Length: 170
Ligand SMILES: [Zn+2]
Image (cartoon, rainbow, N blue to C red; front, side, top):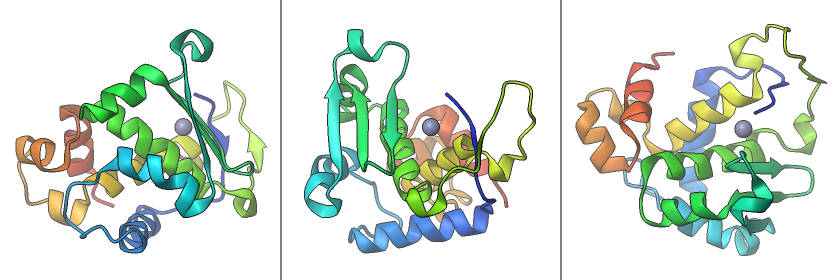
């Protein structure tokens, strides 16, 4: 994953964007998100091209997003596991969607970051996409009062994501 230096986004701003997206898509604010259905509908809802790419063509990458071209590419096995409800792969789909929403042409990357440059977390495109993905699937407002086990089962996220989401205070 390549981190791109972006204008800063606070956790509060990211939480606001995730909540707005739920609202736009008509998803109740504390319910399970059918992220596969959202992906499948992206061509119709937002004119986004979603490609499911064979593993051998995609290699190590699980997904990649080209916000300016409105295009998301997902590795086939990742998409298939997301369809089966695997939390880690569901999060990957939400992560790619986050790049599309947060890192569109109007917020074009300022600089590609080299290996040894330290990027403040709030300016890191990967941090931003992860924070958005966690918040979109499992809103902190509700997750904060739940056990990690119940976050996992209610929102369909991995144990690792449930832990991260619950501990993001902001
Ligand atoms: Zn990413």
